[in-house]
Length: 555
Image (cartoon, rainbow, N blue to C red; front, top):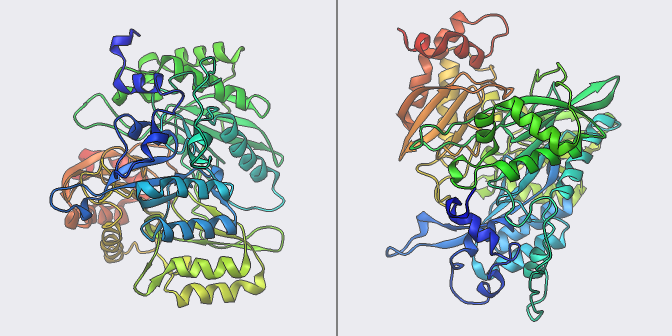
C-alpha cells in the first residue's frame, strides 16, 4: 500500500518514536489538554482525552481523561481493588467502572493528575499499557474461581501469558509514566523495533478472549480472535481458534458491519500462542491501513474469505493447521450469587448495574466493597457482564457479607431479575466522544420498563439478554444478545432482535429510531407472541430468529 494512501494515524505512529511523541513534554504545561497527535498516542498508554458535555461552561469544553487498567482475566487482589477505589476518590469522579472487558476505568482525571494516577496503578502491580490503542487489548477469560480445576487454571494462566506476549516492548511507557520528574526521557533507539507490532503497530484495535463451550461468558464470537478450550477427560487438549469477530460499524458507511467470528482451526496447547501470533501478524501486514473504518480484521477476512486467510496464517505459523474441533458453544453463565468453589470455600457474584461502582443515596456499593475487602481481604474477579466475584469466602462469613451488602443497599443476585443480571451498557454520555445518546444512565429505566413488560406477559422469570450502547460502535456488544439497543440519534435507538445469550449469532435490525420511552412497548407484543408460540426450551432470541423480521412485524 503506497504511503500516500495511508490514514493520518499511520503517519502519527510511524513518527512517534515508538509511542513517545511529545507526551512527556506535554504533561509539564498547565493546559487542560494534550496537543495534536499526543491525544492519539495516549490511547496506547491506556488513557483517552475526553470532554464532559455536562460540565461545559460558556461554550468551553470540560476536558479530563479516562484511565483504563488492563487486567487479564479480570483477576484483582483486595489491595489492588481498594487502591483503585482510592484513586477514583483522589483523582477521578468518585466512581470506579468495571468494563465489559474485565478491566477498570477511572473517569474525570485531569491532566495534572494523569501521571500520578498511572504511576499509582503500576505501583499496585496493574498496568494501563495497551488497554487502548492499535494493539492487542485486555485478554478476557472466564473468571470463575473454580478450585482444583486444571481447566480453569490453565485458561486463566494462558490469558496472562498472552497479555505478556503481546504487550508492546517499547520503553516509552516506563519512561513517560514511571520515571521521576527530573529524570531525562530517553530518545528512541533508531534500531529498535517491536518484535510483533513493528513500527506502526496494528491497523486497528485487536481483541481476544478465552472461554469454555458450556460457558461463553466472555463472548468469544465477538472477538477478533477467540479461543474455545476443548476439554477431554478433565484436561484441555487444545483450543478452537475463532477469527474475525467485531461489533462496530459506521451507519454512514453501508458496507461496514458487525460480525461474529469464524471457526478457523484447532490448536494444541503447545501451538496456541504461536497460532495467535501468526493471526496477529497477518492482520498487521494485510489489514487496511488506509481507512480506519475498514481496519478491523473482520474486513480483511470478508475481503479474502476464510480459506485464503487461513492459508496466510499457516504461512506465518510455518505449517498446516487442521480443521476446527466439532465442539461449539452451548451455554453461558453470569457467575452471580453464591457458588461453591470446590475446596470448601464459596465465591459470591455481585451484580453491578452497568459496571458503575458508586455511592449514591441509599445505594452505597463503593463503601460496602471497602468494608468487605478491608475485613476479609479476598481476591476478586471482574466479569464480562460488569459484575464482581468475591472469592475464597469461608461459609461462616456468608451471613456477615450478606448483611454488609444489604445494609448498604446492594441487592443480592437472587433478588434480581435475570434480565437485569444479564444486562450491560457502555458509558456513552457525557464523556464518550462518540456517543450520540445516553446508554449507562438510562439503562436502569429501560430495564425496569422491560421487567414490567415481561411480568405483564407472564415471563418474569425468563432469561433475556439486553445490551445497550450510545452509538453504533458496539462497545457493549449489542449485536449478539436477545435484544440489542444501539443509539442512533438523541433519545432514539435501533432495536435489534434475534441474537442469543450464548453470543454466537447476530441479531437483525427490527425497528429503527425508537424513542427510549417506547422500547418496552415495541418489544411487548413480541413477548406476548413468544409466550404463546415458543417451542420447548426456546429462548426469546431463538424464537425471534426462527420467526424472522417479517414474521414478527406481521400482525
